[in-house]
Image (cartoon, rainbow, N blue to C red; front, top):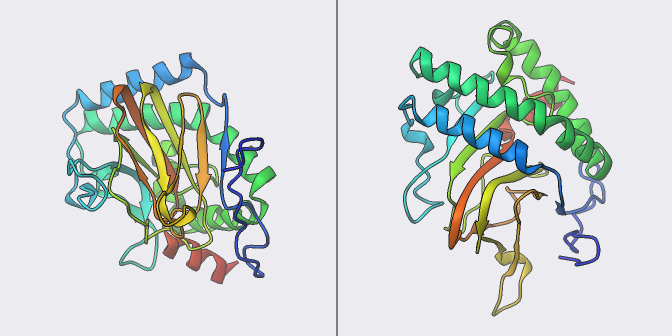
Amino acid sequence: MDPESDQLSLPCDVDPESGNELLGMRFHNVLSVKDMDYILDLWDAFLATNPKHSSTSKDANRSSSGEGAFHFGLFQCNTDFPALTADSRNQSPETLTAIDKLLCAVKRILLPKIDALNKEHFPNHHKRMQKVRLYVLDEQGELLARRLALVFLGVCTAIAVKEGASDSVHIDFHDPKQGIAWVVPIGDWVGSTLSLPQLGDDSHACEFEIRPREIFAFPARRLAHAVKPPTKGRRLALTFFTHGNTVNYALRRY
């Protein structure tokens, strides 16, 4: 990590699809304390509805605690079209309302900022995601018209939300190879660091903090990563990502 620019120093592979873009970047002071508190309040309201946690959301390979993230939005695992995640649909009416309130706040507060940063710093990824947006609306426009909270404005097709950290080293194999995931930790904590073992040397992984009000963008399919749990305080992590199959289908169509 370049301390002057907060850019990861290793460039992406140069090819017609990715270009010579940054491998990753950390951004400061993106969120206000007030906005973080508001999102945390909505998260607590969601938890108070006793939501169902789908079995596919339990990331045993990512967290030593076995606690997994909730995944909201659309996946395209074993189908020819993007479909709602189980966490987004298999819930009580009260929980669905709480999900939509949480996601509406996230859309209003975060998505325009991430979209602008994508366009400026990861332009090739931004262009691909505009094709993904068209593809998703073509395939699921009628469904999304009834769940506008799940329309993520071309930034991603899904958001993983997890309290704590994913402290086991892992790669997000369902992400597109050249895709960018955005990690937005929310709360007030100390002692949590992101580790990228591939970018370190034989004895030490590349490791740095993502502090409150900061966000980080990187290719989660290409770089193995883990996050140490905070030693004090509360940390809610939002990860904005897109399923690789959705990107592949979108690029073939457009």
